[in-house]
Image (tube, rainbow, N blue to C red):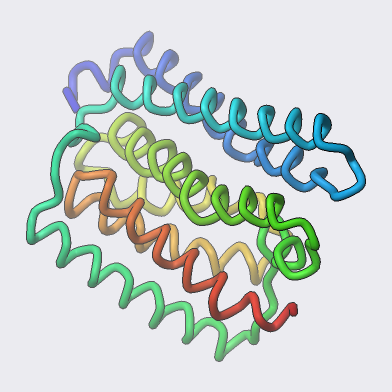
Length: 227
C-alpha cells in the first residue's frame, strides 16, 4: 500500500465505504436463504428458481469482492501461484488453528453455533439442498470471506506497520455475527490464524485453502453429532 495515498482523506473515505458495504454484504449470508427453502414438495420450477437465486447471489457478491480487491488492493493478485513457503505457511496455519481451537473447546466446552446450523445438513431429505449448502459452506463462502476480510481488509484498511491490528480487527468484524461470546472468540481464533497466514504470504489463496480445509473438517467431524 502506498503510505501517502493511505492517509489521503478522500481515499480513506472511499475505501472505507467500499469496505463497509462489503462487510454488510458478507454478513447477510443471503445465498443460504434460498438454499434453505428448497424442499421436495416445492415443485421443480420453484426449486430451480431458488437455485438460480442462490447462484446469482454468490456470483454478484464474489464479483463485487474481486472487483474491489483488484481496484484497491496492493497484495498478490489471484493469478499468482503458491510457492513452497506459502504451502508451508498454510500447513502451519492449519496446525495452529486446530491446536488453539482444541484448547479453547477444552477450556470452555463445545458451546458454539455457526451462523447456520449443522442441522441443515443432517435433517435435509433433499440431496440437492444439501449439495448447495455444502458447496456454499465449504467453498464459496470461504473464498468470499477471505477476499473481503483478509485480502481487501488487510491490504486496504491498514498500512504495513499496523497489519497485526488489522488481523485482529478483520477477525472481530467477520465473527461479530455469531450468537454467543463463546462462538465469537472460538471463530475469531481461526480468523486471526487466517490473517496471520495472509500477512506472511500476501497471497489470498493461502487463507482460502486453510478456510476450506477447516470447514471440511467441521463437516466431517462436527456434523455427525447432529445426525
